[in-house]
Image 1 (cartoon, rainbow over the protein chains, first blue to last red):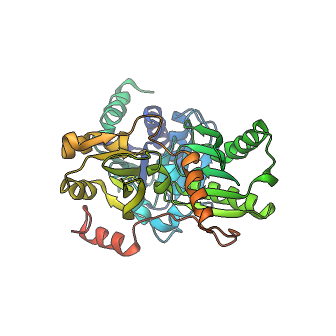
Image 2 (cartoon, rainbow over the protein chains, first blue to last red):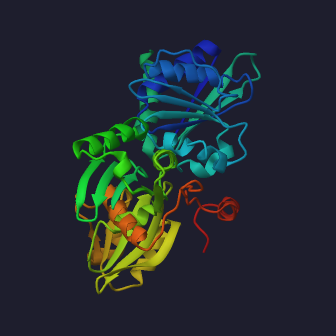
Length: 159
Length: 238
């Protein structure tokens, strides 16, 4: 399943995150891909807001995992500083991934062997036409059919 | 002889006190994984309700793995702390041994399966024969499909239990048909009393030490296997 969206700037990216956040369920896993400054943290802020989490989201680059409490908690991972899945396993990452929260993961390929086959994968790609525009591409498997359809529909109804 | 046993290897948090005569008390909660908050109050309540002081306990037993990483660490840290502080013996009992022991004198093969994610299970095979409990196959983390292929080759009934059952029940039935049985609800998850019973047996044989060097085992696939899988993609080694 695919959905793509052109964001004209951080405001759009945030809004897309909010739309996505409203459809997330416990146990859902989102892998974010995008270079520095592509808007991964902004998108995660939107996701948290959409999930009803009222916390200030910062990058987990140095903490590896930031945990935000909520009706459904949000776990924000940045695996850049990890070697492999073993290291994530040995800080208890697997128990979070398969727990009752939503996981947003940056640098997911570091620990691909710990992830389920079906994840929501989002790429943020810089567009040539403007400094702030991004193509946001979401792909996911069968598990997320309802979510992808819901996110697509929510665009036209405008949140 | 009194044993305090703990199993926090999965979603279940369980603790039990057993003496030479009987299971004195057992607590099982299979609700949310908040073992770090629950385990010590559970142990305290058990001891208080039975008017037993921790000093009267001879050994602390703990499910030693495989299982949830965090769960195993909570169990191990609690058991080691108690054993060390009160100078008691510590006995590690493999999680799957305890799980399989939930079905005493069972007919056929006992196959505990714990969900190891990504269609993998932690498993081992056991069998009762003339009143003795045997491990037919040691612990491993394998693809469910691989386990079922192996079991299909046999003829005996296979009794499945553990938190892998709800995840894989249909696949098991498809593959083994009538030969597949599933443990009833009262026996199909970790119980500290089974850990306690196996620890009693181990104590009788003189096993168990100070526990200072005890570590739980996590049973992840070896690095080599995972590298192979990464390179060759998808399924497990042929």
